[in-house]
Image (cartoon, rainbow, N blue to C red; front, side, top):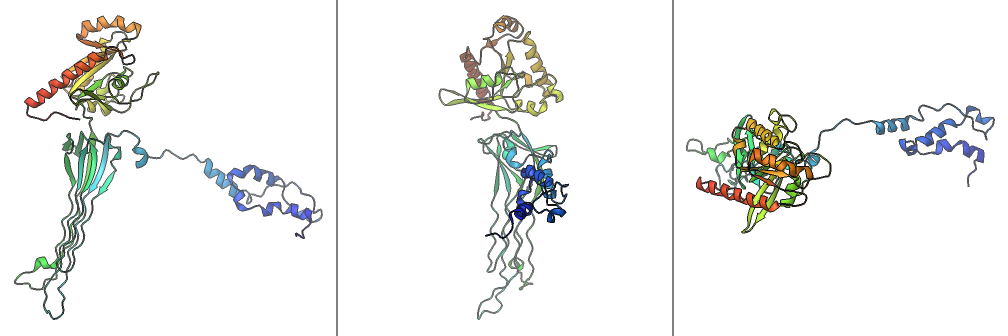
Length: 420
């Protein structure tokens, strides 16, 4: 039972509120309490509260917390976890091989056996860091910014050698170029290819290694060597049989969805794809043709305009090309001329690879009127509609003919054709 009068209990409300209530979420409560605080004259009239100016110390906790929450943070760099959500085709990687284990200096100790001699073992070798091309990896987003190899164990007594460090394998997509500075040191264009990115350090020698006729009790031992350290630049060039080349909104993604199980983003409003997609077209006899959807090229891409050189390099690995033309636009033959010009300016001879011109959006009324003009300027054209599926069979048959010609050419040269 409380012995305080009811009027005194009312004057102590502000003092009894816990400190945790003074936060940014309780700002309204603070403002109300600031207007009604106990007055110094409350002793004359104990049951009356007079409005006074709020105490700055009383509001300090809530104001500081509110300021912290209202503070707008600056743009932070993407973490490794968030970076994996995006397509990455170039990374800078610091690789270090594992350090070698140290040798040991010790002597054999056994009862009734004097002058046992040195028995210090050697240290284990450090593990290498190896890049391995994996067909299941589609982007460099899973590659970290640095790798440290496993170190070898130190030597032991009784001539025991230390265990060598395990190999560290880093999975990279097929088609990854490894550069050190401006020099290309490896091209992982085939599945399962490996490249030793950093060598592990050699293990140190124990004093048993230094035993000689003129030195029967050596005490010398050597430490393990540090692993090799290198800064490498990884660059991904998409590997596919066919590459779809065209300007933005020509219907490349819709066409890839129509002929394969790939699911690039499409919508009813114009936008451009920001990363390459690879779809697999299946034929009889377990034959598979990989078709890559290269993001839209604009005029001046060879001068690094728009997406520029970032995605032009993905066309280098394609064995034959599909020029996708928007047939609904006036003068569609200019699209083919501009595309070939951009490819030739980027790399000489790139536009002369085996190709076929595909006229998309034939389902639109104005597109059929432009088809004869395109055929007069270009020649053979496959007119189709990726939305309705009209004339897709002709494209699939022609794609198979181009693939067979590629396989025969590779076998004649004595090289193995690309297989998916």
